Length: 423
Image (cartoon, rainbow, N blue to C red; front, side, top):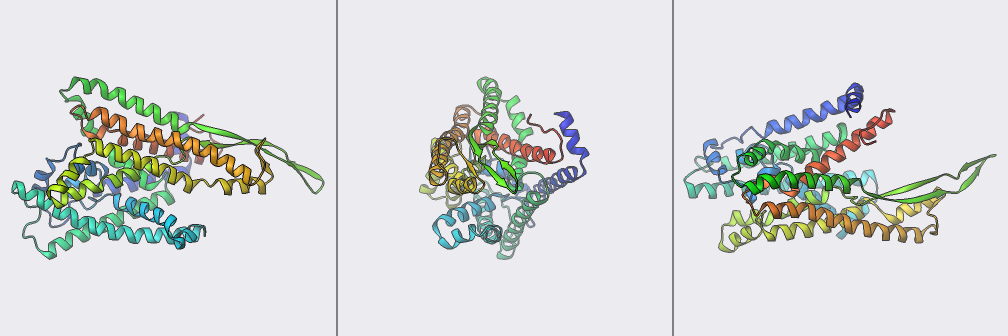
C-alpha cells in the first residue's frame, strides 16, 4: 500500500493531478469560511445554534461542509447542480429531443451539460432567495436579524453572491473531473462530510448515551465492510472470441469475461436521493404554515417519512442510473461485431436479453443494499441522541467516493506499469 502510494507521488503526471485535486478542494473549503457580503455574522451564529443533525438545516449544513451555518459564499454547496443534473437526466427519458442529444455522443453530452449549467444558475438563484427569507424568519423569532436594514439592494447582493458561489463550486468540480483524480462533484461532497468529522467525533466522545458510544463504532465498521464488499462484488459473464483469418494468420480465439457489478450505479443514487429528500422539509421551514411545519416534521432526516422516502428514491435511481450507464443491446452488438459470444447463448438479441436478465437481478440486490445501508444506521442512531453526521447516507457516500477515487488512481498507475492498490 505504502509502495503504491509512493509510486503515485513519484510519477510526475499523477502527482500533478493529485496536487491539482487537493488545490481545488482547498479552495472549496476556503469558500466555506468567507461570509456573504451584508450578512450579520453574530446573528447567523445565533441562528446556527439551532442547527442539529436531526433537522433539515443540519442535514443541508452537512452537505455544504458547514458553509450554511456561516452563511458563506458557498452556502448552497453543490446541491443545486446535483438537482439540475437529476432533472436533466429524467427529462432525457421524457423529451425525445434530449434523448436524441444524449445519443449523439460527446457533442450531444456537451449540449446537455450546458443546459445543466443554465438550470443550476436558475435553481441557485431561487434557493438563495429562499435561504435569505428562511434565515430572516428563524431570526425574527429570537430577535436576531441576519441583514441590517433589510432592503432590496442588500438582498439582491446576497442572492447574487450565493448564486455566483454555486457557479464557482460547479466550475471547480468540473475542473477536478477534467484535470484531476476522481469525480469532482462527488469529491466535493466527500470533502464537505469529512469536514464535519472533528465535531462528529467530539459529539461521540462527549455523548452521555453509553449505548450510542458503544454502538457507533460497530455500526460504522459494519457499514464500511458492507460498502467495500458490495462495491467490489461482481458477476463475471464468460465471453469467448471466434478465431478469424487475417491474411495468412489466425487471430482471436481467446476467452475472457464481462464483469457486471452488483452495484453499477455507485453512490450516485444516494446523492441524488439525499438531494431530493431535502426539498420537502426545506419548503416546510420556509413557508412556516401549519401544514408546512407538519410536512417538515414528517420528512425530518431522522424520521420514518424521510427514511422510507429516501429508500424509495435510492431504489428508483439505482435502476435508472444503471440503465443509463449500461445498455445490454449495445453491449451485445459490440460482442457480435468483434466476434465475441457467451457460451450457450446465441449472439444478437438473445445475448442482449440474457445480459438484461442478469443485470436486472444484480441491480435488484444492489438497490436493496444501498437503501438498507443508507437507512438502517440512521434508523438505529435516531433512537439515541446521536448527531446525524454519523448517518448511513454520510458513511456510504464517504466510503463509496473513496473507493471510486482509489480505482481511478489504480487505473492511472496500471497504465504506467505500476502495481495498484487493489491486488
